[in-house]
Amino acid sequence: MNLRHLFDSSLRGRRDEVGLEFQGASYTFGEMDARSDRMAAVLASRGLACGDRLCIYLSNCVEYIDLFLACVKMGVILTPINILYRDREIAHILTDAEPKAVVSDVPIQTAVPVWTTLELNAGSFDAGLELPTLDGDTPAAIVYTSGTTGTSKGAILTHNNFLANGVNILACWGITAADRLLLPLPLFHVHGLGNGVHAWLMSGCRMRLLERFEHSKAAAEFLDFRPTLFFGVPAMYVRLLETVPAVAREIGTALRLCVCGSAPLPAQVLEDFRERFGQTILERYGMSETLMNIGNPLHGERRPGTVGVPMPGVSVKILETGELCVRGPNVFSGYWRRPDATAAAFVDGWFRTGDIGVRSADGYYTLQGRRSDLIISGGFNIYPREIEEFLLEQPEVKEAAVTGMPDAVRGEVPVAYVVPHDPGFDPAALSERCKASLASFKTPRQFVKVDSLPRTALGKIQKHLLPKP
Image (cartoon, rainbow, N blue to C red; front, side, top):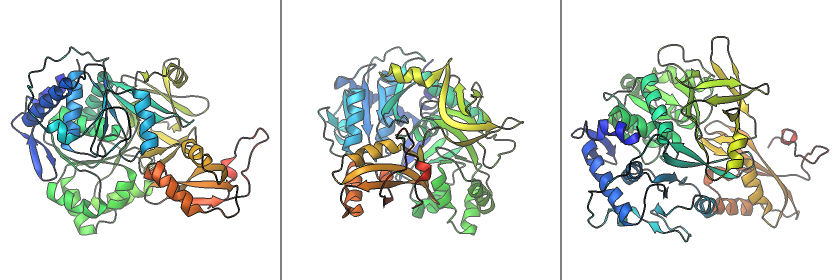
């Protein structure tokens, strides 16, 4: 079985029902099926075939879903790119993935063909395309994530990975065609694509897709659409707490489930949200390489500060070091063209998550931090070495270290400690160069000038000894 088979339960089985809303327009499942058939024909006419990679650098839009479904049908490997990435980061993914083309509505400096959604929607093509035979082990997507060294790696997710994850979240979270899903998450991230889009297509519920989360408009979106389901990251829930109590309570009467992931949810936010909206957030734990691993129960105690119990079919064990390892049908097949990194990521068939955690006597898991010094800001992973390497390329920087600083909204934000060559070091100029070359969430919020970096006898920087900014 592949994803087409379960998606068809909605695309064909519910073809006359409205399935998607976006920016005031609505689309039936049948229309989405026809749109993606046409998109597949367009891609085939441009030379794409099963096994080819197609990079997508787009904000949330209907065409993103058209492209995703076309890739699923054709066996083309979807390779999403974070819309906040800049030329430096995009170039690495394009070099590594070697896609046939990139779809983007903004200019990209690359030798790879760049197509816009406008030109893909133009013209007339025969949608009677002969589709290849795919199985569950066929790669469906390559999602780029970073290791502790900062080297970006592509995690290969198969049809089976997405199928297992989709079936699990439908069963565990009770998602049915009667639900209404409000999805503000970016589709370039597995949270939005792997959970949101798959929950929608596999259940046949009605989904309103937002281009992005805008906290000033969030309450109006909730009141207008009246969703029963909402998937978000901690920063979104923090912003939603600004909703006036009467409006929050009205929003909460329509909701039946709010799910949070991609970064740790402060226990106080869960308690405050429950008091204001009358809804207890369900926190869960997943990764780009594994999709969903662990989750709090739909019926039962949603314990603040914990990520719950393992999902069906997912096994979890804790090494002596405290690191969590997982095994199951949700776990990716390996890193794209990186057998060395793949071998290092597994021990006796168990995937090493890099997260430190503990298990309670009754089976609930609590995460205690990263094995590495990963920073998670607003649901996005930030690997300090990548920023450090960029800073060290700048002429005024002698040494640099990047660490995370607590932030009330985003959880953490990066801070850079710089040993400058010149006493006249200008942090503002360095910040502007970072903004031009790195995604906005990676740009350090502060640049702290120091005379030296604390190191061990072997020269390793001791970040825990850096002064508080």
